[in-house]
Structures are given as C-alpha cells and as structure tokens.
Length: 244
Length: 284
Image (cartoon, rainbow over the protein chains, first blue to last red):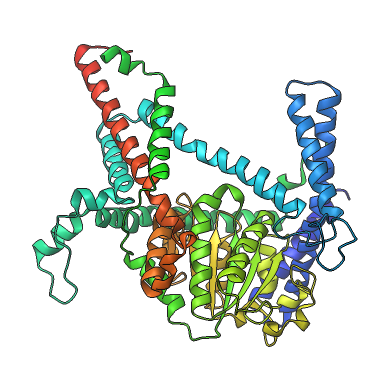
C-alpha cells in the first residue's frame, strides 16, 4: 500500500495532464491537478525547511567537522524566517508613526531588503564572480593544443572570447562590412564573414546550434520514454528503496 | 624564466585577473557597441507593439546572476515604459522578487507619470516552477487571487479582461536557468503561439538558440547582448543616455574585454611554455 498508492496517484495525475493537453473537455482537470501540484510545492518549502533544520541541528549537536557552518546556517535561516513571518517593516511608518517597524515590509529599507541587498546579493555574486579567477587559472593550466581536436577547440574559444567584446572591432574592424543596399560579391561576403564578431555569430548560430538541437531532441526523447516508464509503473526509483 | 612560468603560482593569475577587472572599472573605461541582428529582432519585437499592449515580464532570476541579467531586465523595463506598454511582472524564483522591485523602482523614479495597477503591476512569486506556467496560461486568477502586495486582482484596473497569460501580446522573460525561458517556450510560446523574447545568462543562451526564430523571436545572451540592447534603446530614445544606470551593461563590457583578452594571452603563454617544454623533452 505504501508504494501502490503513490504509484496510482502519479499515474492518474500524469495521464490526466497528458489528456488535458489533447482533449479540451479535460482541460480543467489538468488545471486542477497543476494547482494541487503548486499547493504541494508550497508545502514542500515547510518540509524542506524542517529537514534543513533537523540535519544541521544534528550536525551541531554531534560536533561533526564543519559544525560551525551549520550553526551560521541555522542562525541565518531563523533570522530570515522571523523577519519574514513578523513582516518587520521600515521605520518610522509615515501613516502609523507611533507603531515601530510597521512600514513597508518588502520595499527599500525594510529588514528583508537589507538581508537581500547586503547579505544574499553580495555573497552569491561573490561566489559567481570568483569563477572568473578559477576559469583564468584553469585555462592557463589545462588548455593545451596537444592534438587537432584540442587545437580546434582552442581556436574556437579564442574567436568567441574575443568576438564577444570590443576586441573584435579593434582586431578585425578594418575588414569591410557588407553594404545593405548593394548585391554582396563573393569577396565581400568572405571579408565580412571573417570579422571576429561575424565568426562568433557563425559559430553560435551554425555549429553550436546544430549540436544543441541534437542534444535537445535526444533529451526530449529521453524525457518522453522515462516519463512513460514512471507513469506505467515500470520505473519506481522515485519512490525510494522503502528501507527508510 | 621558463621554470618560473612553468611552475607559476596560480595566485599570480588571480592577481592579474583582479587587475584586469578592477582597472577598467576604476578608470570607467567603456567601448561603443553596435547592436547585432538578433538584438535588433528583440528590440523591434517591443518597439513594434502599439501603445497599451500587454507585456508579461517574467523575471526568473537570482542574485548570483544579477550582475549579468539586471542590465537587460532594466533595459526591457525602460523600453516598455517608453513605449507605454502595460507591464505584468511575475517570478518563478523566490529570490527574483527583489529584482522585480528594482525594476518597479526604475518606473517609480524615472516614469512617475506611470501608475501602479494601471500601467504596471507585480504579481510576485508563486512556488511550483513550470506548474505555475501550466496554470496561468489557462487561468491566471486560479493561482493569482492577489498581487504581490495582497491587493485583490479583481480590483486592479489593468487586470480587467486578463483571464490568462494568453491575453498578453508579448512575453519578455529574463532567465538564469530552470524554470525559465525553456519552460515558457515549451508551455506557452509554442502551444499557444505567443510571441516571446528572452534574456539569458551566457551559459544558458546556447541551449536556447534552437528555439529561434519559430518559438522565440530573439534572445539576449549574456552581458554583451545586454550592452547592445541598451545601445539600441538609447539610440531609439536618446534622452536615456543621460541616465547612468541605463548604461550598466555598456559599463560592464570594459572589464569583460580586458578579462577575455587576459585569458587569451594566458592560454597563448601556457601553450608557448608547453611547446618549449616538449622541444626540450620536459615531460613534467
């Protein structure tokens, strides 16, 4: 029963959503199913939050390696949650000036805005920005023209790296551009196509596009077959092992 | 020298990258941008809309991608405001809401004649990823009974006659990943034949090119396209050139140019060392 009920729910809802796409009469059934999904997704936040607290509190209480990070995480989590639940607003409130912290609780100057603007944004941006340093270091250490394939990759990388900046104009801006009002000659097209920004467009729009299309079609076919296996109960891995 | 370069401490590379990025920022170095054909397709998709057209502004972003995506989100907002389009903001990512607030602050400060509820509104965030898209495309009021601030949508003038996202004349999506542009294309633009443009991170953009031009009119890929789009908007509305924040993408192209050139030079240097070492029979 523990495994049969989720299987039946998944199969029923899955097929309802498929039918609602093709049969107009069942469109509202699909809508209702998706709203149930959205409600469950909202409940999952509570479940996720509870689980996050449980795991990290255990790590702190066991004094496992890195427990201090867990303590910081718990403090940050609880502060943000409290500020959000209590709707701590700006101070003073222009209308109810004698009620402290009762102003706009989302807008500029509110506690949540401060947490976002001065904690979340700088921290996540820093993590993202550090990629520039690691990419430069990794490129210096690993990017070698050891064979033909590596050389082609290297050449493509150079073109795209330079073609996505003004360096393309500095380096190849002297090559003539195609005139819009004239019939392009062979050499006109050739010179225009050799400009770095045009080469970049060609790489992205031809070679990359062809590869992306092939991958996307492959993924789509894979998703369709995996989904059918899940709906028909052939693949039950999403239910877990049942041991816990 | 060869030995020093071969065993170069990576902290030297970090220092060089820091200088490459910091110098153009501190010296405020900018470069001119010429909008590409794809950027002009995106520009025209908004420019050709008649005044009062409804535009869904779906911001599916997080703070990590703010550096790359905020300039294009701001440029989309300014362009739609200049065209007097009706803007409906919404988000599938919880941390996108402050970025919607940023866009709304642009409207409040630079376009004070535009009114909340009549010219623009914030539907806010709903959990459920693509599940949200699947509902709002057939019935937006089933999920959004209020706007982000708790006002009933039935009392908001610009929601009159809007029963679903199908009422939109254009979908503008700024996306940092999934759910994002891919899901809006799959569940809205393609099955309901809706016109859509998007802005995406450099990492994500190549995966979205296959949707152009049938399912997506165009895409702004990374900060380079954001800068070109800003230039296109400034060319169309020259008074925007006086606003410093309307040129954020253009400003960020300076560090990008020097950073990219540095990486190219480092790779060339590394290969020179590699070939010298190979000639010397150095296999370390």
